Image (cartoon, rainbow, N blue to C red; front, top):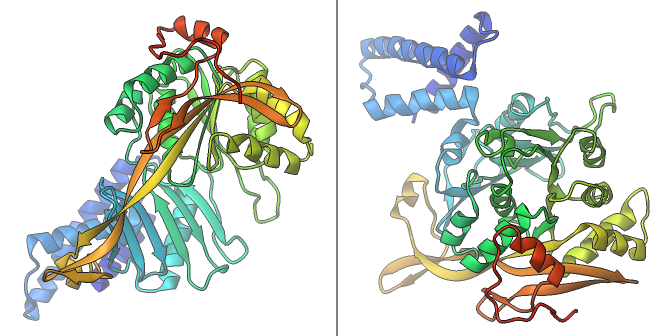
Amino acid sequence: MNNQLVHEIRGQVAEHLSGLSVEGKSEFDKVGIARTMTNQLLDSWWSQARVHGSDALTPQEEFEIIESVLASLFGLGRLQRYIDDPEVENIDVNGCDIVWVSYSDGSRILVDPICDSDDELVDLIRMAGSRMGLAERRFDSAHPELDLRLPDGTRLSAVMSVCERPSISLRRHRYVDLDLGDLVQMSMFDEAVCAFLEAAVKARKNIIVSGAMNSGKTTVLRALASCIPPSERLVTIEQALELGLDKLHKRHPNCIALEAREANIEGAGEIGMSRLVRRSLRMNADRVIVGEVLGDEVIPMLNAMSQGRSGSMCTIHSNSSAGVFRRIASYAAQSPERLGLEATNILIAGSIDFVVHIDATHELFAQPFDQSAEEGYGISTGFSMEGEEYFPNLKLYRRVTSIREVIDAEGNQVVSNEIWRPSADGVAVRSVALQHRTQVDLEEFGYRDQSSFATSGSWE
């Protein structure tokens, strides 16, 4: 594709748009105006090029140029085609010309450069920060970090100055509008776990979803939220908007999404997660959902769960369901309240009902080398076998492997039952029974425990 032509036309279209009265027009209208202008400028370019004997552009080439111009004006330039690809899960950019794309089948491929220079890449990220969030977010040497949700829900994280070259990590959420049944189809858990989780949400149990990075915590949280009756008012709180429950108007017609805000150039105006959680308690929320607990917001979150906001949920990073309690304790110890371990455990016991833990496991496989690598769409990093070239790759499996019921607190320990535990093959199996009072609560919402365990499970 003629990148120079794309740059020229983009500049002219941008100049035309800035001189027009597009105030108040929708994004759809602006894109339509830009598309018309791009077509006109491309026709003009072709008329001049024909005089000089240049070859005509093919329909495909014309289409690619038009889409590239629009992507650079309203999207993320040459990155946009990967963001729009439904099979793409992650995009990692280590400078303008080192771009790795991870697909849903587990393959990871080095693709063409997305910018002509690192400076152009920084400008692209800066443009995204200025117009794609709720408020403008800076990206420069004084603010070298940027977290942002793109219009389609993709999560963007970018850094500069703290590394040799600007770096971007984009996480696409392929499953936005889904329910627990969809996760059963994806083999994340079975029907028994599905029935239990649905009843737990409807019974207004407080749930924490835990797991490692890229394990699917946000996807599970969305699916759990699908069980919340549409009559309830939700308040979601995130460092950078990602959940998108407020966009699912049929499922959640009364939902408001709050996003933390950085300080401005004078160092004022910062609104952190902890403050937003406290603010949510004054917003008539039936449930509070925190996208990801990352620090001192854990204390107001637990307070909200124990002070009338039953049925609230959040996610947290942890390597196991039992490790969630240690992670919460470490956040509480670092908070302004400097909450001690015993007090933290009492708070946990009085606020959390269940921990749902997800494990992400990888299976190594050899993927045939994509011959289109010569065109920049793949790369060989592997070995030859029987005349074919292969490279090693990883298949990612995400499964709910542990569900833990919080029972009580005893000094420095949180007492809990692991009612589902991971088996040797990575599938969750029933371990002990629910507490009798919990069983009664869930039965009111249609849950029938088909396990062979008595109602009095052992504590651990």
